[in-house]
Length: 314
Image (cartoon, rainbow, N blue to C red; front, side):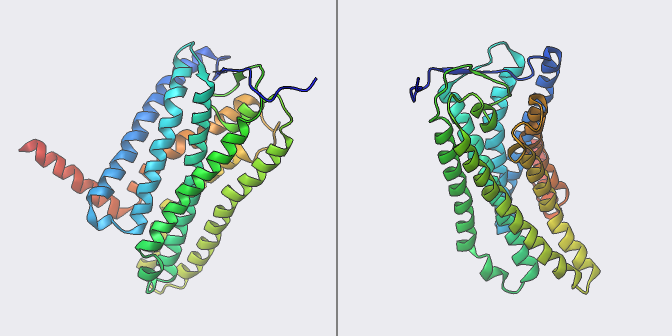
């Protein structure tokens, strides 16, 4: 009998780590602290860059956009995850699951392209310093930012709409902490082979193409740095790139483990942990990476802090 192309599932149950109730209670507090620190750290960077006019240059404006992405990413995932870990009410509506998956893909895709744009910015600044003001002018910067956000929206719209076009007729238990594409797709009551081919190909393009561009940019940057006569100049160039390289390694390394792994390569519990690596660690560590390794950011943050102290003093 041919299945009707409609869903008989009206909500989903997020299982989380329900097999380990003690672990869930402990993880709740860890994730709550992670969430609050992530919001605070990224909010500080957004406010500092917005208020300091000397930072209104492409390098820091890209960082501002990246922090906005990280805040959105955490806000989409963490509140629902905390509910799953803290209560027995682990249900999420069909539309709620759709929305969560949509914004995860939107922010994830946007971050891929933003990291690629940031690598191009560093390449232009280090390899072609004299023509940098022309190469990375306001128009080019605006186009790169818009392209990153529009690409994220397109990826999210196509992939989420396709996933939820499949019929879901039960069971409705998602063996995960949030509505990520792979575990939701496992519940579809239809042949998803064509979609899986599309998703894998799309992931290669969305994740690996920017990554290869980043790799190529840094190969060129490395050769340019090695040709610099001044040791101080080389150290400054390495310091400028180190934060971005750390962020790229963290994001791409953990995201690839989730989206480019074999379908049955890992246990469900291992897949959950790998998803947590890029949904929790990257938004948490990026503010630390960019503020602690960047002397200009440290100077501005100290300036903002002193202004705050002076206001409280008077």
